[in-house]
Amino acid sequence: MKTYAETEILDVIVIGSGAGGAPLAARLAQAGKSVLVLEAGPSFSPSRYTSDEIEAREIYWLHERLSGGRNPQPFGGNNSGTGVGGSLLHYGAFLPRPHAGDFRLHTETGRSVDWPFSYEELLPYIEEVEAFIGVSGPSNYPWDPTRRYAYAPPPANPAAMKMREACDAVGIRHADGPTALITRDFNQPHFGTRKACANCGACHQGCRNGAKSGADNTWLPLAVAHGAEIRSGCHVHTIETNQAGRVTGVVYTRNGENVRQRCERLVLSAGAVETARLLLHNELANSSGQVGENYMTHISTQIWGEIDEEVRPNRGYPSLTITEDMMRPKDADFAGGYLIQSLGMMPITWASNIARGSKRRGADLVRTLAGYNRSIGMGIHGDCMPSPENRVVLSDEKDALGLPKPLITHSYGPNELAMHAHASRLLTRMWEAIGAKDLRLLDRAAHMMGTARMGTESGSAVVTPYGQSFDIDNLWISDHSTFPSATAANPALTIMALSLRTADAMLKN
Image 1 (cartoon, rainbow, N blue to C red):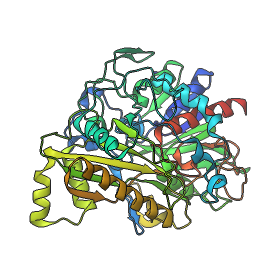
Image 2: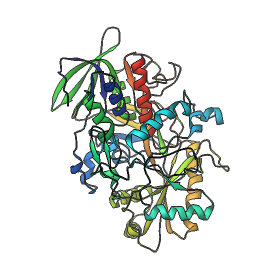
Image 3: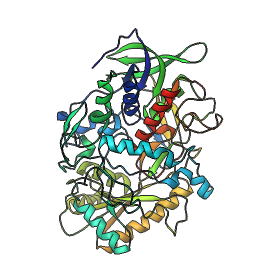
Image 4: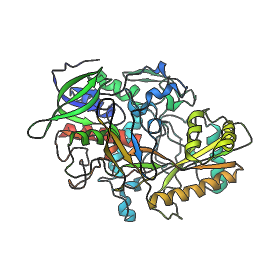
């Protein structure tokens, strides 16, 4: 890998090496730009990954975040990764496309906000991402018959099969979900051989054989092959500007020392919390007052039940079955919609969710946990509207580097509560239809979006529709902080597509 001197003025510095930073870094490096990617976490070897949930915590972002509001959100393994590759190291690889209607929800319903461009404009980038990283899926996708996937889906685990029974019982369509997995060996350019998915079920603990399509085995090797440097263990805390207000470089801490690196352009790809935190700490790019505002999650209501047969929910790819029939339910008393996916889960994660998300305690909780091997789950991902009461701010507490810890306030509004109630009724009816017993509904949220929204007006948005700061023309943002609304789809695919779109805009700028 090429290395740049600390005295060099680089074309582009990218803060963050995950879904937002890696595709952009590869695209800019391919165009001949000098690119440095700064990653706060370490660089991991796939051989280091383990299905041991305790040991696997090293790939999660575990720096303390303060969580408040009526629906405080847990962080770490639920939504945040650390290391070269970012959160894609531990994401579940469930890769649905966003729903076209979610880009124009305000036009459709008078609620939420529209995106500043259409789904159709983003679609070529979505297809490019899928083709490059490797995505598996069914030969016929019921909600989009024109869609094609390069790889056949992995085998369905018991939870996926039971969800299909439940869908049939209540008259809902279902299919194998799109997954960022390859199911046959493939020689990834500039990386090497990626082995076919072994169906081990440990996607959230890191993929040992390269079957899961992350940044570390796709975009980043491509970037490095074209001259980019990936510098790990670098925690950026200061963004430097000149008298004209333009970015001139950054200062980061590495091995206890502060290092300055100058650049012509800076891209923030640190995620919805850390990107906002960095801008707020440096008091930059916030003439709109929108930095840190409109924090969003996905409504991720889950239901778990027991059946008589042993299913062992840790086995097999965790989330294979999908239905999009609830993206616009006819009986909805809310705007937007949600998708449903089957759920497998590792035992400690499952037990933590049960303890946190239910009121079971004592002997009742012990009996529930003893039923793990007979448990089957389903969950939703529902659209979340931007709200002025949900935000990221700087707290009075300091972290190990002396920086203010972020305080995240998260509360469901009336639309989210109505969606949760609708999903709870449907999920209960589905599991009851196939005889599942001892049902447990878990009210939870997943992922994180917003805090530096894109838009067409500088008074109400932080960046343009291409991710360029309205206030500082050589500052760009490429991550899920720019989402105007959450959409119902897991965010990774949309983030990567937006990353390529932002890179193309930078090259034209």
